[in-house]
Length: 174
Image (cartoon, rainbow, N blue to C red):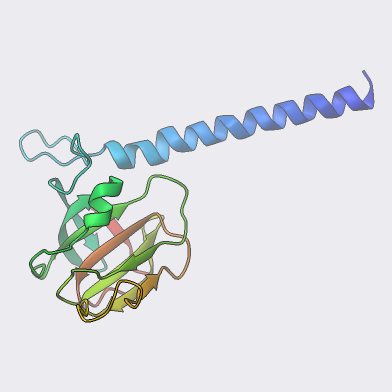
């Protein structure tokens, strides 16, 4: 066997192992997060409705507090977010799930008439919290502030402002 064919074989094996690892991560890490749902009758876990909208809720523990959160999974639900909603009660919010690779996320407060904490999450841990004031309807869309995650994230939690959530808090599905 020549050095070249040995190197090619090693490259093929390395690529194969990489693909196996990627599939395993998708099957055992990402997929369960997206498929889990909480149903009150059976105790089975379900997280997504058929349309991926925010009509499903689940219970999260962040730091020492519990939050009942609506889900925003589809691009449509994520675009809508809490626009034109009532102020979330303490202990309520909306969780934006991003099944693709973690990346920097940008949020704004268009048509959100109350302040929020934007809780940036990666791998079940809060990596930052941004206090976002209510939308100013006098500003054009171009003038409205954008809020950038401090690093790549896989989910974002919106809760009423002054939640007390801090970077380093764990996020646990209850």
